[in-house]
Amino acid sequence: MGAAIARRQGGGKKLVLADFNPGALSALAASLTDEGFDVHAHVVDVSSRPSVDKLVAYTAGLGRVVNVAHTAGLSPVQASAEAVLAVDLVGVGNVLDAFGEVIEEGGAGVVISSMAGAMAGDLMPSEMAKALRSTPTAELLDLPFWGRPPFDDAGHAYSIAKRANHLQVQAASLTWGARGARVNSISPGVTATPMGQAELLSERGRGMRAMVDASGTGRVGTPSDIAEAAAFLLSPSSSFITGTDLLVDGGVVAAFRSGTIDR
Ligand SMILES: NC(=O)c1ccc[n+]([C@@H]2O[C@H](COP(=O)([O-])OP(=O)(O)OC[C@H]3O[C@@H](n4cnc5c(N)ncnc54)[C@H](O)[C@@H]3O)[C@@H](O)[C@H]2O)c1
Image 1 (cartoon, rainbow, N blue to C red):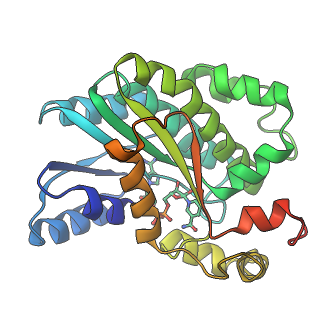
Image 2 (tube, protein in one colour; image 1 turned 30 degrees about the vertical axis):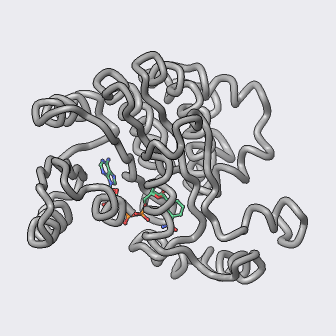
């Protein structure tokens, strides 16, 4: 998704690409450079605030920061609950906090959450939502519910982290808004990226295919479906939209909420 958004947004700008995986990062940087983009690659671990601070300093050193797209993530088939929380929960907080200090007036950001977060939000107690919305990023992993069943399971941790992203974006809309900038999230459904393919091939894959088959579109998403939604949220066409989540899931959550798909 990061590559698709970079291609959709990066023309005519200085394009900073950042990722944890140096090999994947340099391969994408080389390919986008060949395509004519002005690419600047930087290795980052979003779960580390000092690492994100270095990325922000590097980016701000190149010019005004007008758009930020946060697409880094780990899925439950790739990692433990602990690692999922470090990247998908704390990583989002670090990026929102650190880029919120340099985002340009009129700028915009987008965070990639998940339809899993929308489904978790339907069931989440309000006290838990309040804690996730208001706890400072550095203290998020101290909240009392982590590490105990069911949140010691990577799938549960992923869903809660992705719901937390909606709440983190709500809170960040105020700090970003104080600088004249906006920030929103996108919740993709099953999307044909390396992560999406791994999910479909996992033991949860059959259930995921059944959900897709029963949805309004009946298909998986493409990275460009997500890039088009991000283009809208990063453009002046969405100047009255901030602190909200856009579901780009082919209709899976609607089918859940209408009872067509059984939980
Ligand atoms: N593909 C899907 O079906 C799907 C569905 C819903 C939500 N999402 C979410 O979309 C986002 C993008 O996923 P994708 O499908 O493009 O996956 P992907 O695996 O292709 O890309 C994720 C990238 O994040 C990077 N990353 C992992 N840990 C990192 C860290 N600590 N610091 C910096 N970078 C790190 C990886 O190296 C990888 O390049 C993720 O947040 C994912 O949870 C994906």
